[in-house]
Length: 133
Image: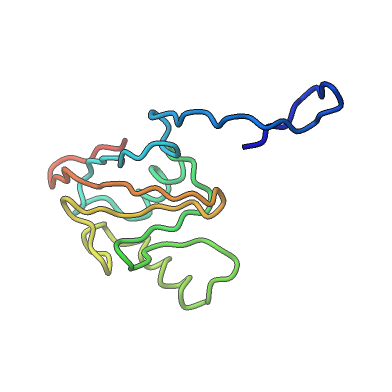
């Protein structure tokens, strides 16, 4: 790993350093999946994308997949019919998606801007209460 010095010393702008240990409380560095408890029969996919993925996790260009099935993607190079499909998914509740998200479901959320993906385990879904992380 190479570190760029703010104030160069000995005419060295770049200096090799050992990488830092990953911060286990960081969702990017951590290998631990995020457990989320929501009502899959009540929460719309739009609420999940806007309130959890974008607001809480800070992802700007999310790609959300359930297995190999893409549920949502943002980008300039998408075909018109795919954009329409993703927009239609936003209006559905989680349990009514083409690949339904129900109790014990694991989805993959990737931020295309960060070039880093994380798997978020979705578990403990209840039909009575909705809880945002």
